[in-house]
Image (cartoon, rainbow, N blue to C red; front, side, top):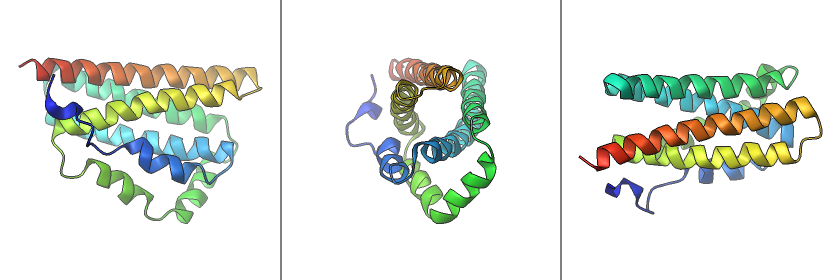
Length: 164
């Protein structure tokens, strides 16, 4: 295994959690949906930097991130308007997220993201556990499963590259 798994890497969850915690549950979910779309952009960028099956895998991860965001946004009427209002209150959030990945190797960025996917899985499961609506509960669990797929993909890429 490569050194990209060191404990000194920053945490995307550590940046997002205190910000998200300031808002009510539905707004938390919409902020996280925004973060999922940001992750999709990172996956698309990484796909451009690799080839072959890795490229296809990163594009698959991007699609899953977009799927998660769309599913969560579909649970909230006026999701886009609410997200815009939230982001207006948080003008530095995008820069804070980007800073987590700045000046890191691809493998380090992937490890940061892998850890973020694991945290995302746990977050959606926690939302599901507190959700009384059966349909929303199912959506939240489906999002957790998509996060898990992305984390597994990243783990496999990191293991393959670490074994070279």
